[in-house]
Image (cartoon, rainbow, N blue to C red; front, side, top):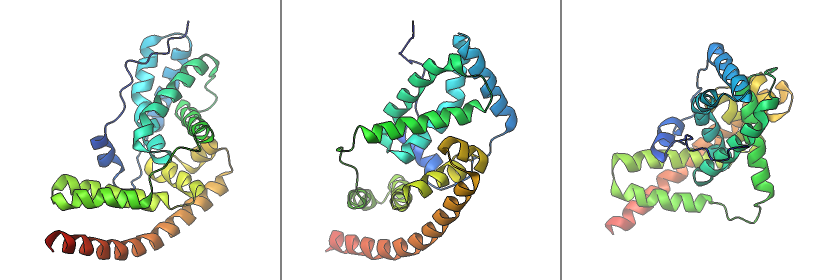
Length: 228
C-alpha cells in the first residue's frame, strides 16, 4: 500500500529562501552527485525506504526552489509535497535512462502546470502588493528588512519576465542545470532554452535600470512621508 505521508520531508524556510534566492547565482552540481541520486531513485523504486528518504533529502531543496520561483513561497511547500507524492508512485517505473534529478524536476514542473490549470481564479500577488510589503520592512531600517527588500526587488523583476524566459533562467542560472537538462525538463530543444535565457538576461538588464530609478523615487517618497 502506498504511504502518502511524507513525515521526513522538510522544506526550506523563508530565511533559507532569502539566503539562497536573493541573487541569481549558478549552483554548481557534480555528475557524481547526480549519479548517486539516480542510484538512490532506483533503489527507492525497489522498495528501499532508507534510499527514498535520502533521495528526498538530496533533492528537495532544488524542487522547492524551482516551485517557489514558478509559483510563490506560500504554495511551494504544498507543491513540493505533491511532487514527491507523484514521485513515490512513479519510482517503481523509473529505469534510470536519464538523470533522476532531471526527471524529478520535470515532474515538479508538471505539478506546477496542473496547479495553474486548476487554480486560475486564485488571486496572485501583484507588484504593488510586493512594494507595499517592502515599504513596511524598509521603515524598520534593519538588516533583515534590507534582505527582504532585496528579495522583493528580485521577485518583482522575475515576475515581469515572460514566463517561458523566466523558467529557462531559473533552471539554468538559479538551479544550475545545463541547457541540455533544462531542455529535457521543459520538453523543448536546447536551442530554445539558450534563446530564452539570452532574452531573459537582456530583459533583466533593461528592467534593472528602470526599476532602480523607480525604486529610488519610491523610497524617497516613503521616507518623506515617514518624516513629514
